[in-house]
Length: 545
Ligand code: KIV
Ligand code: ZN
Image 1: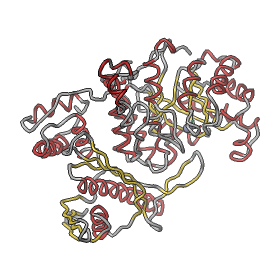
Image 2 (image 1 turned 180 degrees about the horizontal axis):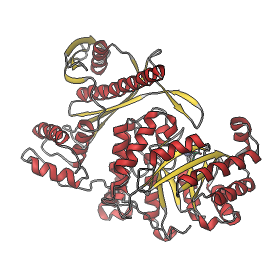
Image 3 (image 1 turned 30 degrees about the vertical axis):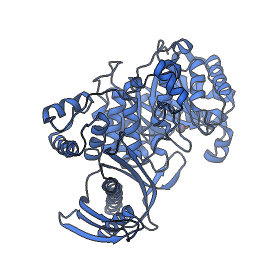
Image 4 (image 1 turned 180 degrees about the vertical axis):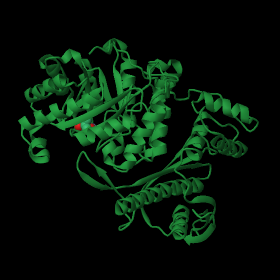
């Protein structure tokens, strides 16, 4: 199939990305990320794996319903295609279809492993059975939906001639996109580029489908492999924001988009990504998943556009192109110098938020965000877009508040035991207070919260970042917690058929780092408690049935 000169971006942050250990997202966060992916210009959004759980199904369905029709600000003028993943069996495929069908443009993505290693040890089927199952699955998917993607899992380690056989049958059965996963990130760019070229040349009907790349980053080669695939004729790239995903992650969207953009004569290809939305999307995904971006990460790392060495700074001052191949503005960094301050009113605040893409906040959220803005503007002379984003993330995009933080007071220093007293409002609307000692002020706050709620967790990650420069900057804290033994919540990954212990991330922002840390803890705890309630209600429903 001809996409012209355009490379389609298939984003799987909400599916493969969410499979990263600890990256569990709640429905509201998934919706917000999907909305942002639409603004970013993603062509196809893989919203999840609907068979994995009722929660996954509901999230995909809501994305299909609410984000599926969105066209606002999109370069392509068309809404995103919403895709759902399914193993190659009728139950999974039907479930994926039921979840996505409400979107004006929807896709079923079904997969079956083809490498001998997977056939023998995981699926326990032979090559013939693999072909039969492919035909059955793709035909069934096609009977439901006009847009069907098929992926031969572990293609990177599969026999290329067997792949040709499987893919030939997939095309005959009605597949419209063929995706070639390097599931374990094993191939080199030369090998992966060769594989795509070989498959396109040898598979009858190759020109009737779109060929797609899907590379994992185990050897740090995912972006290079993806670009090699594109140079061999692939016209869809499967990527995630910040490259998050299983193990070392997937190809990162921002790296591929900026390479196509920065090297136009090398690739001579178009895309629909609005690159000025990259930084914002990256920050949102990092805050919601709790997966912190390494400072030297290409395009979106904190140092990606920083010039430290004197010789570089000197060159930059003389001419920015001496050491800069991309302008920071092209990825949405420092995009706006328009600042707000304590004299800015509600109207200016609303207009600015609308310009930043937050035009759809309801009155309650807008009021809460405005209150926080005013509070901040009293402490900080200049409020930038980055501050506003931190406020929105902290105030609006939080899990429902089962427990609400009222206030905290800490005493600490090098001559006393850190002590915290905390006031929370519980699910019953009653105020609870308690105090605790800790190894530091944050620990003391967390211990006091634990005493009130009656929970205990392991803190598996804690990061704190200043949103802007300066001592008056907002601090954004991201944490991850794992419930202690006995209280562990389990997710299920149908791809590996394995349960996994879930971790819960939380984020909070404040000019006070202890308050930001407390808000992050409450955010993670509220997610954990909601998941526990959901699990309890499923068990109860099953018992009734
Ligand atoms: O890595 C992989 O093989 C996958 C498939 C399900 C496409 O994620
Ligand atoms: Zn994958």
